[in-house]
Length: 382
Image (cartoon, rainbow, N blue to C red; front, side, top):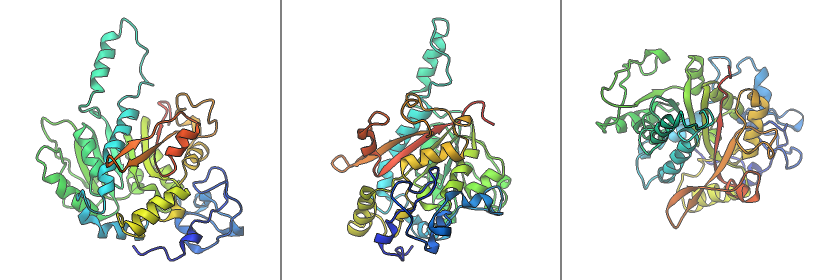
């Protein structure tokens, strides 16, 4: 994908919107009204922008013809598809990030105790069995997992090996082809073979059970919206490094939320819109070091952690649908979900999850660039 046509100085300017939007709320009045704002679902009428503008559009997310897929982004990643499994190529940083992402998923899913009965002497054996199941083995056993924007399958393969019944979807046919080819080379990976009608309806895929193996892996060339419209539901819905590449991120978030089962988890990773993120992601990684192809990221499409949490509170049902984070009741009253920074350690050559108590300066520092997001749906949610 070509570099953004507007100067970086313009792309870095901020637009003032309502408090529940996925674009800035604190940096002054709007000064931009260029047509490319529509790629993020923003209305430029009267010099302001609103992520909620799509809700009154006849082609909103409730329609099967609606999609948040950005054609230019898909073309860009399709051209890079052959590099997905090169640990020194275009996606080297994602290879190094994968262990930290999986560690975060395990912390939120396998170590989640919110739905368990408190320990008593009578249920002590059950408690011991739960602890054993949370070990380093197949802790996703019995869970249906969705990896939206799976690319070449870096995360999908890992989740399947951990016992999950994984569906990886991507709008790039080339990415899905690479993912299937790579998974097919491992005889111990429980890959589900689909029918010859790859681009047919969701239900056209023929499942081939793999005996003696826990978990499964299936790839589909489709979009999140089509999957949602088909009524698919999952225990764990993941979208890693995807939010900053879609059109209308608010509608994309709603789509993901609708596919989470009651009691299930929604987990994302994305990039915050800060000067530090611009320096590290655009200036250094793309322009100077060329670790990533220039033009891969667009600064104005980055989403700050508090914007994401406020949007889920204000536009995705809030605490009527999603659980309140433990220990955060007295810190954030109009935000839903937990965010955690994920920081690259150049000396160790690995990504690390950032610590810090909720609401503290130390925690916010770690979320200045890349961060994770998690929210759990209430068990009694519709």
